[in-house]
Amino acid sequence: MSNEPLLSVSGLSVTLRGRPVLSDVSFDVGPHEVIGLIGANGAGKTTLMRACLGLIDHRGHSSLADLPPQQRSKMAAWMPQAREIAWPVTVETLVMLGRIPHLDARQRPSQADCDAVDQVLKAMGLEEFRQRTATRLSGGEQARALLARAMAQDTPLLMADEPIAGLDPAHQISTMQSFARLAQAGRSVIVSLHDLGLAARHCTRLIVLDKGRITADGAPGDVLTPDLIRDTFGITAWYENTDQGPVFQPLEVLE
Ligand SMILES: Nc1ncnc2c1ncn2[C@@H]1O[C@H](COP(=O)(O)OP(=O)(O)OP(=O)(O)O)[C@@H](O)[C@H]1O
Image 1 (cartoon, rainbow, N blue to C red):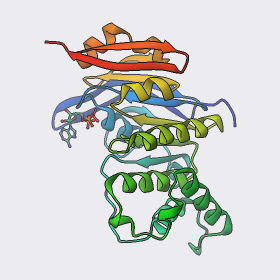
Image 2: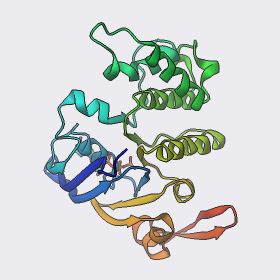
Image 3: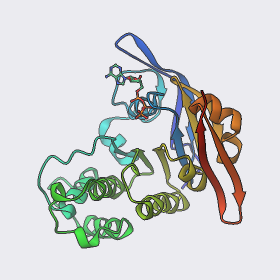
Image 4: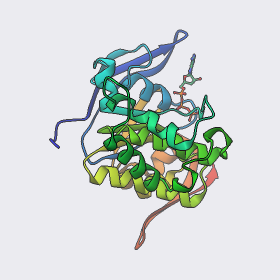
């Protein structure tokens, strides 16, 4: 894979109901990155991802939004925050829906599509759920199945809106590790998340949004300073680099 940016964003701005929600956001995403998008509730994380994907009206430029839909679906996969599964299909069928951009004119899955689904079900620990009805899974299991569908799309870029919210600790960690494996293979992931401990440990880069603007962009150890934590989240926190990697623990809410 080349070192061309997988996504290039410049001057991206969004106004919703007359209110500026995203202001002049610029960044590039290269291969091998796991980017944690962090910020308080309402900071604009979802809006930024949706604007990058061309799903909402925006000003400025996103290289993805500029692509025709067919090409866009081969370039980026999207797991939205809403965990909605519309039909009572099996998990296997749900994940196969991620292969739609790759299907031939007859719309029948090839062996390569079946292999891709098998691989993702295994990576996400969903093999035992393969024949279960997706709408009858627990909330966390549904989230993993929806993430598996996005991963089956097999795109250079994966964008996921709070994919680990509601997962148990083991599945939170294994999901972040699966993002790291994608990055090792030359892909990149943009993931919004509120768990700063997991962000510090598993992301290669953090982008901080505050009231629709980027206030920091860099390696977790450089970004998660006491000043930034105070200004962005209104809390104190403990951060330490240990033998087992960085450890981050929120402590107190500042008055
Ligand atoms: N359809 C809409 N119309 C008007 N305002 C909206 C709309 N959608 C979102 N907003 C506002 O835009 C701002 C950014 O919302 P967004 O969902 O991007 O935040 P977020 O950082 O993803 O938040 P969270 O961490 O709570 O998911 C918020 O103030 C929100 O109230």
